[in-house]
Image (tube, rainbow, N blue to C red; front, side):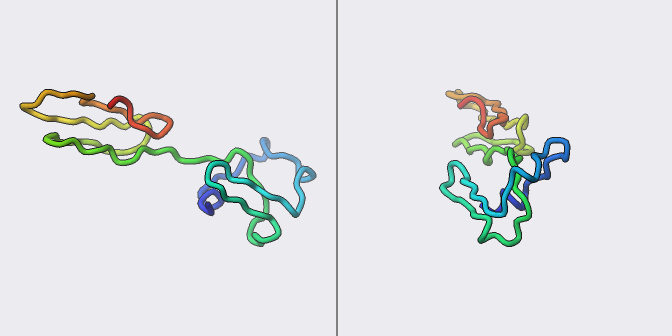
Length: 106
């Protein structure tokens, strides 16, 4: 959960909300993970960021029995290729890492 603070990038000043909208006591609910943080217990937090940036990646593509898997990266747009000489394919031999962090096809 702390990676949200450590890995985020600052909002440009032109997109920042006025300081008057914030108080010293705040509570943030981190959707989906069940965690939350409270300003009075986090002494190292000096502000709150809205719309935090996350780096999207795909997991390492699955291996396929009797096939060779080739890929260079797990960033969106990356491609994995499966080569299975002598076998008939029942899925996609080329898959792409999507912008939502999953591999296209089956």
